[in-house]
Every structure is written in structure tokens, then in C-alpha cells.
Image (cartoon, rainbow, N blue to C red):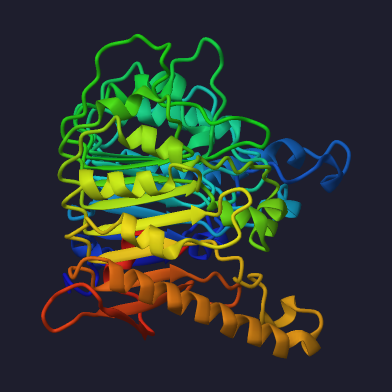
Length: 514
């Protein structure tokens, strides 16, 4: 029994259709429940989807109907609250709300959102330690209850709120911003892990709070605009001295320039993050003071674009337009990345990911990596062609990395001109099937180019190298990498060759598949 009922899933339709008498977990299994996952759209009885035309003129039901519906919503919240408080082993609650099409934004049955009464019931469960929300937190028609009396909240260890990557318009509501301000203001002192959507994150208040136990902070979404009187992001991070993992994965609004985490004009306190081991920053700037303050304990550094730069220039870009987002794609140069990492002292770095456009400092950057990060075991590089570059200097690239004597896994996007369009052989995305034979030949030629590059890398790099993955993005392929196992000489010297394999090395999942 304890194992069988430790993790339970509750579909919202069990109380959507009968909110006045919701179907909940049997009381007999409550002592064994450790995690509950709520899934569904949450058909909301408290939302004002009715109109005056639904009732005859003068009908008293016009006034009574919304009150009855609100009472039902409150009773549902109380039912959940009573149940959760009686589950002594419960430590985690997860909400999964499927996304809906923005054309249905005002249909409460199409757009998900959690009732405040339900959310308050969960957050006030005293023994709860983890809350996670996948999907839109609140409905566009939501508002905080009048005369809100929020009780003491649980001492949460982790709070995670993630929406879809290409979040549709409107992105966040005033209710969402107000609620997160209220919630985070109550739980910040106990949190160890925090994941938030940028457009609803109360950054203007977070730099006023202490985060004494926070070990992991992730900020996702579109970069928010910082007004002239707003504190920079480093003012928030400075209140998180025990961070071990930090991820700032923000897209850039079109027509704007990336902002530094720590502007040179900010002369605040001398911040330190002595425990920081893993850092991800999108669209990095070489004049950002933040990199000069990274600790020597760093183990993993990621400097990349979000979304990937190549996705802005192919079929993948249609996802962004369909979602109503308008993002730019600023891409740093190799010289910019070199300036950044030259400001760091990370002798124990084992994983490094970079995305940039090649320039005159391309080889110098790779040589610096080889000489400065002797412990590097995993290297992922998205290198885009320099302006006017017709051929990729694979041999020069390989020789620039010869000093990486501990490298085991190399993942690269070399932006070969021979790569076909991502829609090649892509089923219904290709209008003229008569072109398929030529497309198939183009894919085979590209395979030949990539296979030759893998062999050059394998023959030039250190004998420690065991796997090579080269990006080959195709719309219809689940796996976007062409992977090779490195076969070395028996005497352990350089000069191995690359053998194609169907599977992706487990370590490759460190950075995902795009």
C-alpha cells in the first residue's frame, strides 16, 4: 500500500463537472500519499463567463448565480485543503495544465488556470515542501479575492513555475504578478530551489528579500524591460549568496540589445557566490562585470542563445510567429566569448557550452580553452560561419583543441553550407514530392561532409575522446545529432577514426538535443 499509492494523479474533470461534490482520493489511502499531480484545464465555476443576456430582465438569479458559483469554488478549495492537511506523508504537489489556443482565450473551458482557492489550499498545507506548476498559472479573467486573508504558508523547499517555451500572448496577467509577489514574499526565506517565468517574476521586489538557503535559481522566458530606476539583475542575485546552480535563459525582444547582469555602472555591494558550480547565461555580453566574480569552484558554464540562433533562420521560426512572440537573435562573436572567459578563473571546469559567430579570434578562443580548462571533459560548441566564410576549417578547429587531454565528449554545430533545409524529406511540409529524390541525395552529401569532419576531429584530438556528436537538424527527425564513437589506435596515440553509431551518448543529454 505505501508504495502503490505514494504517487497519485487526479484529473481535474473529477471535480470540474461536480464541483459541489468533488470526487477526491479515498480517505483510506491518505496516509500513504507522498505526491499528488493535478492534471487538466480546471473548468472554473468562479469565472464570470455568463452575460446579462443569459437571464430574463429582472431575474433575481442574475445576482444570485455568480454568488452561488463563487461559493462552489470556495467549497472546492476547502475540500482540497482539508484533505491535504490530513495527508501526513504528503510532500509534493504538481499542477499540469495543458496549453490552449490563444483564439479561445476568453473561453474558460479552453484556457487553463488554477483557482486561487485551490492554490491557497495547497500552499497552506503545513507539511508540504515542493510545489510545481507546468502551464499557465491563472486564467486571464482571474483576480485576487477581495479582502484577501492569506494564512501562513508552508515552508516550501522548492517552487517551480514553467509555462510553454513560446508563451502565447497575453503572456502574464496582473493577477499572476500580484499572486507571485504575495507568494514569494512569504516563502523566500525557506526556498532552496526556484524556477520562474520572467514576465511574471517580481524582480522589483526580489532584491529587497533575503534568500539564505536558495541553491538553485532559474529564470526563463522573455527578457523583462528594466526601467531607468530599476535595480539590475545582479542586485537580486546578490541576495542569494549560497547559489550552486544559476540559469538565466531569456530570449531577446526584437530590436533590442542584451543587457548585462552586472552593469559597469552599478556600484553596489561586493557580491560573492562561493558555492556556484553551474551557470547558464543567454546572449552574454563581454562588458558584463558578473563574469569577473565567478568562483574558481565552477564546474559547468553555458553561454548560448535562446532560442538557438539557427532556429531563427529556418522552419522552426514559425513556432515563434504562431505563438505571437517577436524575438531577435543577437549572436556574440568569438572575440566576445574570448573576452568573457579571459575574465574568469575556473581551473576545475568540466563542462563548457558556447554559441558564437566565428571571427579572427576563432582559433585563439579554442586554444585558450585548451590551455585554461585542463579538466574539461564535455565541450559543446555552436560555431556559425564568419562573414564571407565559404569553407569550414575543420582541421584548424581540431588542431586548436589538441590540448584538451581530458575531453571525452565533443558536440559541435559547424554550420556547414552543405546542410539541407530542415524541412528536407519532411512529409507534408514538402509540397512537391517529385523533389524528394534530389533532397535525399542532398542529405547523403551532407552526411558525407559531416562524416569527414568527424574523422578529422577524431584523428587530431586527444586519446581521451570517446564520442563526437555533430548537429544535423531535420524537422522530421527526433534525434538531431549524428553521433560517432571514436576508435583509437592500440598504442593509445593520436590518429583514431570516427565510427557512426545510432545512439546518443548518455552524457550528451547534459545539454539537450537542440
